[in-house]
Amino acid sequence: MALNFIPTVWAARLLKALDKALVYGQTGIVNRDYEGEIQKSGDTVKIASIGDVTVGNYTRNTDINTPEILTDAEQTLLIDQAKYFNFYVDDLDQAQQNVSSMDEAMRRAAYKIRDVQDQFVASAYVNVPTANFIGSDASPVTPTNTTAYEYLVDLAVLLDAANVPTESRFCIVPPWFHGRLLKDARFVSAGTSKTDSVLANGQVGEAAGFQILKSNNVPNISAAKYKIIAGHPMAYSFAQQITEVQSFKPERRFGDAVKGLSVYGGKLIRPDCWAVMVAS
Image (cartoon, rainbow, N blue to C red):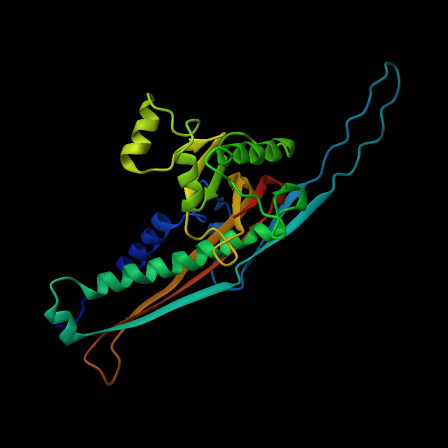
């Protein structure tokens, strides 16, 4: 039986799966302020900002300085990443299965694109200023059950020094680091409904002013020297779009195929609003 394929329905399904599955690229970790302005791979978005305004001392009956000319700074968000999927389901396989192979294939395609985008966003830690690092590849820190929480406090202090807003801060940790936090009474404090919910549902929770998320895509070297990123959504701008989703029938096969193209790009536009801990 031929697949009755409606392109707009499948495209919306793929986009929903991407937004739901992302960790680093989800709203609340990055901002998508410029996403509506991209159309195709290679597009660029110019991001302008105004420089500081000088404040002077006023003396009565004395002329003030002539108006200063404001300076502007421009950054470019380049949509230079393009990933595709292209898969085929035979009519015999489709007829013999109780579940839709096409649905599962679309779900897997969404997951793989999400996984690649997650790693792409996380890799931007290399642009964080050295002053905002705790530890290094040469000398990583080693959090314990009692010091893991304290290192989060140290990350918060670095963001405080950079005047990063305290609301909406996040920190993305690997599972092993989260496990150490769970053994610290400062993170898991019995008697509060929020903590009880965290324990019951297996969610991560909050600590040291951060929303704590865990991910297996935390950048690392040989399962060591993990780059734990803490920051604010204003720091990183991300944009992505599904530009093409097409169904077709291969000429020499009995079955249905689907191919799709996703374009995206991102930039750490405020490096000072991220802090990184290198931990083993």
